[in-house]
Each structure stands twice: as C-alpha cells, then as structure tokens.
Length: 244
Image (cartoon, rainbow, N blue to C red; front, side, top):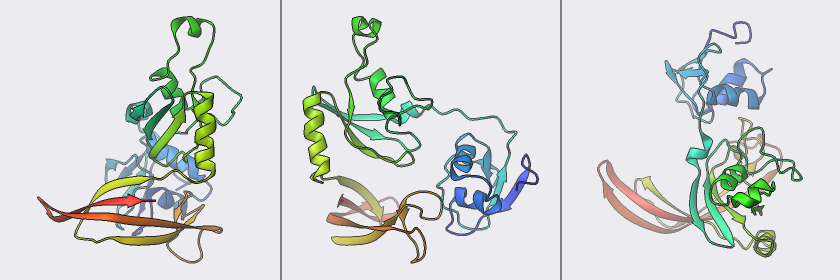
C-alpha cells in the first residue's frame, strides 16, 4: 500500500474494520491518519466512497485508497442535535468524529477542528451583541466528555452553580443513561456483561473480541430492562430499553 500511495487496492478480511484493513497493509500510518483518509473521501469500498472508518467488513471487499480523489468536506455541526435546554443546562446528542471541547482548557479561541463546545457557543449559547463586542464568550461549562469517535448524549452546564452540581453527579457516578432501540428478532429482558479496552483492534475503545487484545480492561454492564415485541415489514422486531 505504501509503495503506490495514489493507486492502491487491497481486500478486506471478515469482521475487521475499514481502518484496521488500511493499517494492516500500511502499519507505518497512524490510526488518526487512516481515519482521516476515510472521512475525507479518499477510500473506496467496492467502487463506492466509504466515509466510515469503523465500518465492519464482510470479507473479500475491494478496498481502494485514492489519495488524488477530491476531498469531501463534512459539516459536523449539522449532525449535532440539541435534545433539551433550559437556563441551567444544555443536553445534546454528539455526533462521531467531533471532539467535546478544545484540549487546552485555558483557551477561549475556537479549536483548529470543530468541537461540540464551539458549536453550542455559536447557537444556543450565543452571547449578546454587546458582550461579543467586548470579547466575551458564551457561558458554557464542560462537565464530562465523550471520545472524539464516540456518539452519544452529553450535558453542558450554563452556570457555575449548575457546573458544580453536575460535576458532583458525574463524580459520584449518579448519572443514569437509558437508550431506546429497535432490534431485529425477538429478545427478552436480560443483562449483558462485557469488558471494555482502550484498543479493540482498530485504535478505538470498545469491547474486546478475544482474551489477548487491548491491555487494561474495565467491566461494563448493560441491562435490557424492557422488551416489547413489534411486527415490522421485515418480520418480528423488538423495542428495547437499555440502562447502562
């Protein structure tokens, strides 16, 4: 892959991610580099542009790296959804591939790459014209983070009082997360236990698929607390409520 960087073709292996396939043929490239190649539109799967570096492969797909292909520019802000806001806090759904906030906490300037905090400062927490003229930033405070590649629900404080209260909630692990999903087939109430690792084999955090990968492990428990059978166009489905 590294010998012909502008016109490279390789084949995928079943159950590996697209990013892992690229690094298998070019281990000198970093995880960040191969993920950036995917998201910028330089990678093609069976002739079609594939932007998701975490895409799981069936095996045998033709993977092409076309570094001369036009770059795709994505508006990450467009995928950010505000779920709730009030005078004390803002709750959003963070899309993948976007950092929560700039790494330099002392900086008030926008990050080189878009962050969730920047997006909220430009929308729901935009300061008044007078305050903007004076160089003031919107009052928003980070109380927890999600990894850049992870999507999920996040909470931001709008006052120092709510920041202190929310920090205490997350510090004591008192925040409860519930998700509702529709899955194919029929399943019942159950508990799923797994182990989270820093590297699941593609440079990202996640569940390990064997006993040798990932180093330090953290036990994770997911409770399926309610399951409701549904009948859809493609057979039986189940609506489940997950509690982490």
